Image (tube, rainbow, N blue to C red):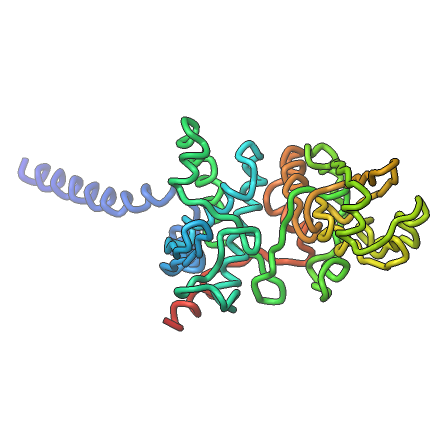
Length: 339
């Protein structure tokens, strides 16, 4: 009897020992082998440390109040996306806008921008940089839809948190605009210098934009005054036209004077440098296609791509050629180190 009792004790002890070794194995089995050997945990830690941004503030010069508003970088990005892109746009388009907006401000913080801004401001809140509205202003704008709308924007920004666009290891100049004429513009065809990632690409989705067509009527006298020319007949309206890669006016002769398309656009305050002019009695009718300078990402094009099932990475890599989606942390660490 005593011998049987001893055998029972030994058997129970053996079972306990087996179970004690089995429990950790049972807990690990539902996960991958990487988890068991620690590789997955190392990858997750590495990814998290690469993405998480330092605590960085953006100092925004508010043109209406003439004061500087300081706020966390990601909150600033929310305010830009909400101000620069229509709230009804697709989530993937909003993500693309968030990526462009964050890249723009990170580049400003790292390399500096407008040195004439007061009180250490980094950036303005107008189209000179990026339009920005704070949550109080957005609440007044959206009213009863504020909570729904701000959540939509915040979700898109959060999904891209810590991501920026780089070219050859540096943040890009992530320019964007409303609506193309079916093509974007080479940087050198609108601005002074060529930028390798800002090249003309097709953007057929913009044809559905409500801002695609526009028409303005100028009295001849006003037209002459703005351009500093004399108009005697139809032959004085738009001769010797050259086109850019993006199908906009490169150069044009008006009233015997040669202009760039950009000069005409700015002097007449046109929506686009893709324009046609027609003399109609005592008026000149100017018809434009597209809205904005045309360089970089088209916002309505981005939304059109999103509607076709493209994600935000597809979108930014279409409009910014040869870029890489990178983490902002390595650049923001430099900003922190300067302080």
